[in-house]
Length: 112
Image 1 (tube, rainbow, N blue to C red):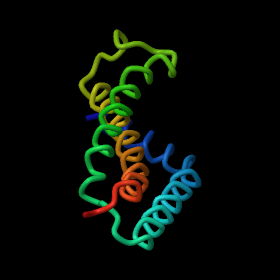
Image 2: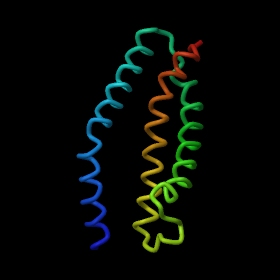
Image 3: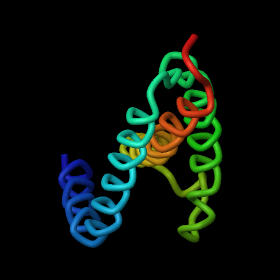
């Protein structure tokens, strides 16, 4: 239980530290969505496949490079919470990348 509580405290502190980046990314996403919607005839359904590919690629890359970036290794990850955090961290970055790519891909792929 201690590991979960510690993780939640760390995530809260990180959220406060990176709040400007999160707000900026959200504003960028809303702007991209608005731009894609205003262009009309955007291929939202066709754009899901490129967004999904970006999600998988960014998640995989983030999963494998994060331990080295934090001066750690996979061998140091002893608890299931560590593995869960790593996967969710990587999936979060993949989700943000996919969310930003989706409106861009929709503008490039017209519905029809």
